[in-house]
Picture (cartoon, rainbow, N blue to C red):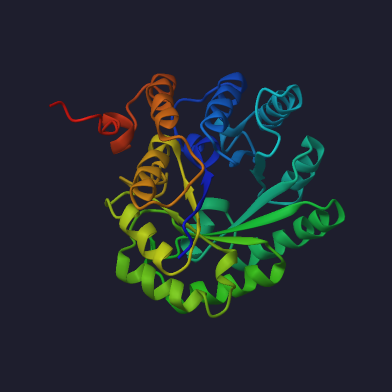
Length: 311
């Protein structure tokens, strides 16, 4: 196991797109700035999707433009990697126009979830990827892939491991540089995680696999640890545990960045993130979205280092 992991911040996209409060572009840019100053190196900054269906992501082009201006001015580090989610060719054209150098595509492992989420079958979603991948190659843009409902679906229940493995192979062959395996509704347990990732490692290089766990049933940290022990070193997290899933009643957001960082730092595993600065962002964001965030560490902080023993 490596003594360092990569954290991909999902708060600005996967987190905010499922919040009832819609934040304006300037607030989202400030959120990005604070995250990056806390050490975030990879951040999914938004999505080029229809504002009719996802109003929280309206103005993504403006968010990208203003964040890039901060990079150019030296206000935030130039080494930060930004990506945006694109559902189809139209979204990809918008991404190209924005100047981003990385996009993400997504497919479900459940037909019912695919139809409910993006109004098409799994096969149809893969057909939509073809022009996206062609444009990415032409414009030298990296493509990250997501597979959702890899462990369970709110409509179909348990999802077949064989189906997940087959779809992972299919997406890998498309040419994605990294494939994020998602427990979208937070149903996975350690046994499932160990079993599935062992099978996935046989068909996709382990260095190209990432974990994406929601914390609906309080299992996300255990699942991340299980995946880490199997060689997975990239994990998607969301500041404060922002978000949820509109199609799974009670589903919470992606596992909180602060909680994951606290766990790994306690193990002596480097994340490159400043935990104290992350914790400082929590109440600011809670005020913006008008409700407390579920992160445990974000609420109570951490113990300070031991001082000298008084004699």
